Length: 286
View (cartoon, rainbow, N blue to C red):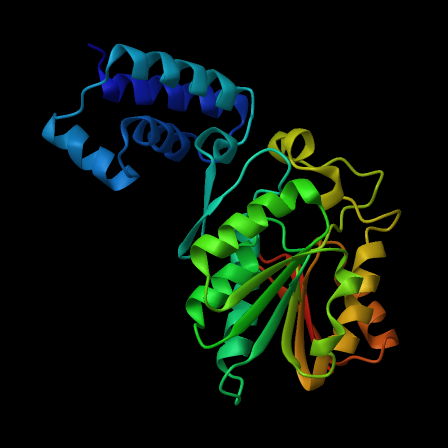
């Protein structure tokens, strides 16, 4: 029988050497996943000395540690991603949501809660796994949330997550964001998007992103703003007067985003900094 605490320490050291952002957290989450325990439950069981690992589980753990050490995303190993207060199904072919987007989502959550209407309408353009729209649907249950995603590979996850998390107030649509249904023109309250915004010649810093996230979800043309331009135009069509727009962007794109939105006629254009003090999102009103 293995010493689980020592196994976790060894995995942590290997992950740290490989450059994993949160080595101990990832080690504990992997062990907990294989054993069917949450991270908190695993920690409690370790203190109580009640953790046991079967031979088959040990082989799975060794394989998972090797894959995570090679910087395969933790979420691809477990098949799930935790985002704000929800758990999403994810895997190859869909962008894995990052912590920065959780913060960006709060801007749309607050705007949706502030809507004076009984059932505010929210669009999540470039929905991916559905993380943003489903967080809003979960936290503002009186909202009607529509997520639209163009990638057939990603949409399999979008649809499953919408059906599991927001069967009553969420709808997932397959198609280009510019094809958002005209029936919502001029009556939508909030539009949010985490579009592909990385310039085509730039390589993402994290191997998990560069090697495993789909390029369609990452790259936005020469200046990274090709899809953002379509988001701006589509949101202008969808939103009512006074409606609220939120767009995530790269930290060096704050000024370019403000100029783009101002040139498109948006009002009250602002840049917001994330928890690291970096420009991360633009908001505007129609």
